Amino acid sequence: MAKTLLSIQVIPKTPNGEDSIPYVDKAIEVIQQSGLTYQVNPLETTLEGELPELLELVRQMHEVLIEAGSPSVISQIKIAHYPGGISMEGLTEKYRP
Image (cartoon, rainbow, N blue to C red; front, top):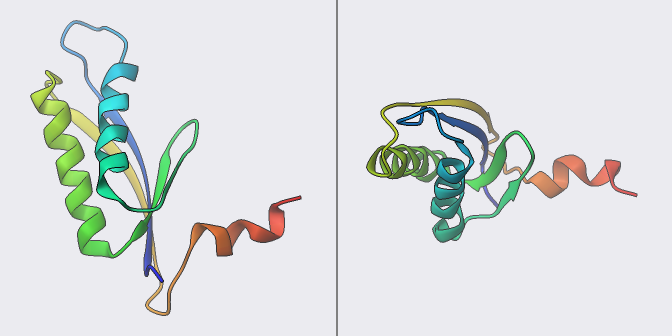
């Protein structure tokens, strides 16, 4: 079981003020290729994993956005670390119908 949940919202600056959604899509592609459990939500994406691999994924997301032409990227990140294990499902199952 994973020990860490990380939620991230990337806020890429766009070169000419264009829509940022195509850039956010590139960040989500990095997540999809990671093989980690994740859930895309309207304002952020949550991932399950080990803290070092999640932080490395954040670094990769920033690099992809810069390579795509974003002059800068801000990320808002929330981290929940439980040495005994944690999952999105376990935290939210009581709210599911």
